[in-house]
Structures are given as C-alpha cells and as structure tokens.
Image (cartoon, rainbow, N blue to C red; front, side, top):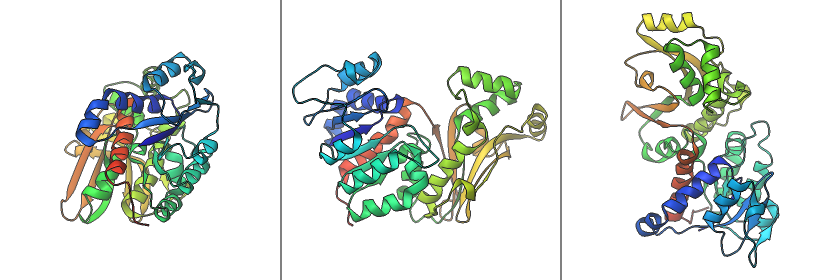
Length: 342
C-alpha cells in the first residue's frame, strides 16, 4: 500500500512511528507492508519518491525543521504540491492529517475530492472535510469503489466510529452520549479537586492540553464538530454547527461544582447525538453513571441500543500515537478489503 501524507505534524509523525516500530508485526500478522511515497506540508516543504521514502529519514528531517533536511537521492521530487502528486498516481491512499479548518474545510476538502477522483482511498484525522462534507465525500468514494474512513477524527484511536458502524450494526442504536473533549474533561476534574476555572485552564495550557486560544475547547465547538461526525456515522444525519445547541464550560463556577458534589453528582461536558440531531452542554451526572467515572483528559462514549441496552467505551481522545492508531486501524481495514462495490 502506497501512502501520500498531507500534513506531517504531530499526528503524521505519530502514525509514521507506529508503521516503523510495528513494521515486522504488521507484515507477519497482517501481510501489511506500506510505503510512504509522498509527504506534503504547509510550511516545511514536500517530498515524494515513487519507490518510497525512508521513514526514519522522514522523522529525522521533521525533527530538524523540515523536508529540506531529507537527504538527496535519485528520483526524489521536492516541493511538488498535493494536487500534482495526486495526479501523478504515486499513491493508493491519501492520509489527510493537516490542521482542521471548520469554516470551509479548505484546502483539505479540495484535496480529498481530487484524491477520490483519482481513484485513491481516503483516510482522515482532519475533522474539517468529514464535518462539512461527509455525505458528498462518501457518495464520491462509493461511485469510485473506494473507501472513506475517519476513525481518528473522533476520540483518536479509541474505536467509536467503527464500533458504531460495524460492531453495533443491527443493535437498534437509539442515541449516544459522550465526553469528546479532553481539555474540558481535564479542567472539570481539576475544578472538582478545588481549582478555580482560571487556574484549571492555565494548568491545561501549561501541560499542552489546551491551546493559547482555548475557545474551541471551552466553548464546546470542538466537541460539537465531533458530534456532527458521529451524527453522520450513527444516523446518516448531515448537521452543521449552526443547527446545534452548543454550550461550553465557561459559565461553570466553583459553587456549581460543589453543588453537584453535595448531591452525589459530577459535571461533565456531554455531547448528545440521536436521530433528531445533536447538542453539547455541561450536564450533572450521578456518580453511578459510567461517564461520570471518566476523569482527566480521557474521552468516553455511551451508546443506547435496543439489543444491548447501554454500551460504554473510554480511552485516550488525543495524542500522536493514539491518533496514529486510529489511522492505522483504517489503513488495515482498507488492506483487508481494498475493493468496494460502487
């Protein structure tokens, strides 16, 4: 399997380390021996070679500051754009791991369309194209007999998309509720331990859990974008952020946290998805609820079904290797079933 990476930041490098470190196991256990034939970055150059790039050298070049640090060799292409490399037919799968843009999903959306048009499979960690155009992309993939997979867009490598669409198929899925943002979950955990909102946010930023501009997290929009993806994956509902009721944790104070504790409850930022739509809001949960026990930066999702009643999964929702695992699982799924009926 030949892979073209769009983006080579934390997530792209995380996947590369998994492919490199697991090379023998992937080959021996799954017959999976991928090559990275191209890497395109927004500001650190691009590389491509029809025979494949050396993964260790790619990681070393990224650590040194960019693709200019990759050693020269015969046949190496430098600084080609993503569309040129797609049209050159150098890869079987586009791995879209560039930064997320939730306004119009560009330039990733055009890149994804071009890759599917060229007959490539598409694997994403970038939420933008799935959040804004999942239906159109799946239709295009189906027409070309290719797969669109996006496990890593929600809860990183914790398998909620594939569980929803495959393992829980036929279970009579009615709804899902989840903790989909680790920053807010960490802050609420710290606030319950006695920290103020401001101190919890400052600590989350210092630890790298929150950005310098944390609004997408604390105002609920990151969780909402993941809820939109789940609404499509679970129920085939195409939603927009403007369709949703979205409330973050910015209004919670110490007295709110204490009030919940006194009542034997705990605040969590909960995304709710059902056939009618989706919403995000802080909710008080009884301590007996499985989501209430999920602390720190962990994420979790509870499905409500007819056949199994409630099913809950918890795990890491971010991180280089965790997100890389979601991408790897999708690549292995394509490896097992490369042909899709149109």
